[in-house]
Length: 505
Image 1 (cartoon, rainbow, N blue to C red):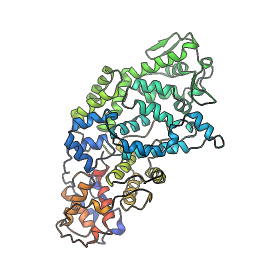
Image 2: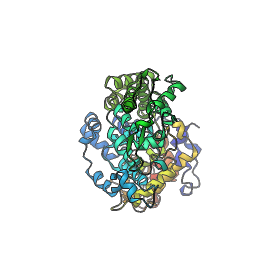
Image 3: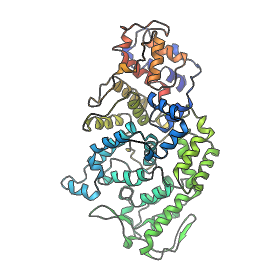
Image 4: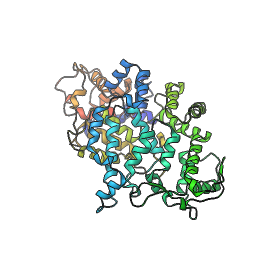
């Protein structure tokens, strides 16, 4: 049985206690042709955290080009409800000195980092600026600073605001310079304590390997060491916790990293040298190819074509590291158009897509329900911002192809469809997913739920498998009193969400 064949009948094994005793999962396995996905649905599954029927209708009405261009300029997208919701986390506006003053008796608290993850989930689920939020998550993963983690307890929220969000659809060069002046990154990878006498190579190495040119760019250990010397002195002011350049910690003397070299005679000019170095790395051809590859993996396929990567890298360099032109070229490419079904959602993406399509809304007040979503995301195996290593979460199907990841997603589908937990959230009644007028057959019921849940159309084999789970055939008449429309409806909704189509990005 292939993974896709398994996905076609995934509900055959989940929720087994609700299945009729005569249900035979194996009988549903076949290589039936999969149903088509529209261009609009394909675009939305890649550029948002999940299509909804309302969003599909909006994009069809406005046109894909108009909608996408607005998403590439998020300040053009009205998001008043999200702005109002974010007021529930006022501490995210605090500067580091305010955090330290407020928590002077609880130094090292993780409160603000938990607030940040709450807001990250809320924005992904309910913001109208969906592509922006996708890119915020992409860059947070690329320039990963684990949240929560002890070294950034008082400034990780500022890294999100001033480095990632400020530059997510801007210039990568500007983002990298901002990263070099961020106390969060400087503390996380130890550069805050790096000096010419005792260089710390952690960030210097990750800067080359992960953030810019990539591991195959041909740099040497000597390059890593010189990278650390160039970055020495970029540090953090101890009392207030803000960025500070400390010239007395900067190494002076000739330095060379790959094609970048400088006499580096003055410690007073060491900060300017470091910023020039970061900009040089941002514009490097290997960085262009590295970022182009990662963007193509995120939006096109796990193994994008070299020609697409080369094209995107050229656009990146031609536009002086600006991100929007690269995304515009990517979404206009033939490779993107023909990549339907080529990506699999990560557990976090599946989690957010489920919240969106079930029309779950935030609590009327407070943040307890959203905090519960944070713990639920952890149960899926992918708490947002929470990868413990500098390299960020993997974005390929192989990384998430495990029994535990699958069961984690299924459990989330069931809990949210049945509205078991979190109790504080505002749920849409599951009966609202049943099409009007009421479907006449079991097959029509399945088809209607597939549309309501924005799952790509089921083929005949999938439809038959789901109705067999209910003890019926697709053509069997459906009465208003049948249990499929009552106590078993949440189980049926979860079953449809467990489809391999739901798992596709």
